[in-house]
Length: 260
Ligand code: ARG
Image (spheres, helix red, strand yellow):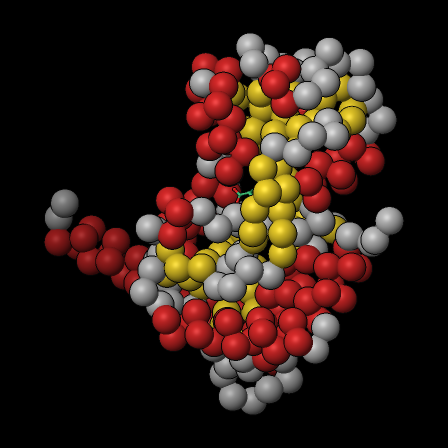
């Protein structure tokens, strides 16, 4: 590369970088203006996977749901701005470990294995792994799953248990919870193992599907932060216990999962 060409390339790159910075900066200012606060607040990022109603899902362009609302309430308590980053469920833990103001909130089950990678808050909800099948399926109980093709969301506890109990060759891993249900409807798998709350939503939306009555596993949901980030974890736990004590957490959960 000759000298002239090199410096032209550099100049073009510099202009491009400045333009990118301006775009980025003005975006930041917009966010600050939205909160109608003059000082720049810190941003609490919620890393999630929005294919999981009623905890996180898209309503038009917006991500809504139990986690989205509890997450926002936590940010408000902490005097922070709030931003949701949607990603594959499988990426949440590494994303959380890459930032100081990042919390993973995705109907995520506390497990011993995950505890080695991230730190968990106190639990804010309970989850149950259940089995969805077609209404005319010959699968009647969890034991009938042996030898059947099972759909799960990649890296979820449903995936981990199904692989342990029935063998990896019987398990199809989908990136999105919603795709597990499509796989079941298409006949690519015979059953889906997934958390109860999204399962109820999916079954309500598809009249060819039903839930098995037997539960597969019972679990606790919590928020995760970067391993060793006690500063953020203490703040989250403080906010969560206030929001639990004043009934906010229950109110949000009841709004999305009305008692029958
Ligand atoms: N509770 C299960 C787990 O932690 C599934 C969570 C899936 N969450 C989601 N937002 N897709 O493994």
